[in-house]
Image (spheres, rainbow, N blue to C red):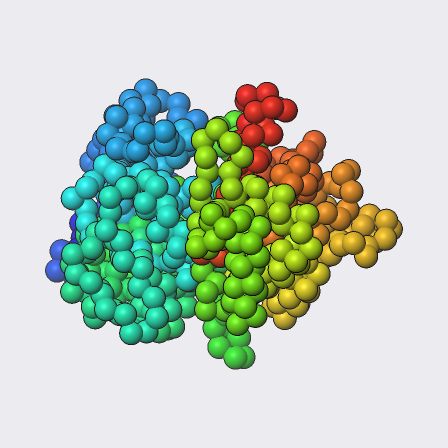
Length: 564
């Protein structure tokens, strides 16, 4: 359980000083001791408030609670680190990391791990989208193998991604993905991953696990204090000693009401009273219809309060550490949404591939071919997916039909993925191949109230120019939907540093040309290309093959520093 020490603060009667202390989100008057009680985390804030009135008392408070950990927490927010103390501390953290061979963190991620350690895991990781906050959390756990089991509440679409990242960064963990409404929570696992929507169903079983750590990915999902998923998530998490929250949302900056539940969970005595918090930091206004807490006020003061709790880096701050362009997969489970039409096409495609490969492999299905990669020859997968499919009308049509059905299944999840970027204040480019896939995505955004721009094979030069201008210059148009093969080589979409690729292309160079519409002169952030991959479908195989082709081309055509 979290506990916070209450600090006694006494000063001569002074109305100005009393009003200043009352601005703290949590404080109370002790009638017995005739003094103010303030959570230890707020001592420095209280000292700053009292300094103009009682400087000696303020200095005494600061000197009394100036321990080494607090000094390091103050210093760690400067990037890059500039003091000997924090540089030495980060070096000790790097030595304690237990990561698999070949994996390493960016320097700013190492600093975030150090911050997690200083706060004993009770932290809000608030870096921009694409800076690897989940990896930071897993790296910190590598230092604490005894901090098990771990419960991860995540957006439903990211459960599989979390499973893959855990296996990658913490190999050997026993992971249960909790799916559906009637699963059995299996005791003895080290990780339990589930969506927030399932928290009300499984809260009792999760409480019995006596977990050591809980992580709330995209903690903005519990912004509504009264929602069933929030109440259940908090009921589970508040029993757990180490609580980490993750969010890159713009709410961290301009909608404080949406992070109160998270702050209350991380520091319950510091942020214990909703109404006090709302009045001080949400610009609370009483209207004809009740209280309006949608605003923001006293931002500098709140930012100071968050320094011992939250670490946040923007892409611009850490740009020197980032590669110019990164590719990140997002693995999706679309099995429940694929139609019988896909199953039929897959069956026909399997038979066509068997026929193409000949009698010696007739008993194998297409997935067996795709996973056989002879070390010194062209792989079966590349032969089948390349030569046979592209040259044979039957297999090509069947494969393209499967691609479109998979694209539509993935398209149905794009809006939920994209909203996280939009909430973080990011513009976004979304690439797809099929017109029906773009249509579905566009319709979802229009239903959600977002203005979209679209560039596809039907767009005239004038329409393309107009779309690019709006995207580059108008904040009211945060989304550009684009056919991967449309638009031409010279298109500039540098207003965004994130792109979602819904459907892959046969040619890595076609994909690179699409990616480079973001990654070109004028880009001020490290570009991240997010590839959606439908697990356990032909999409999985196409993804692996195109990536291998890309790596082969890079070795031939590009300097070593650009590879990957």
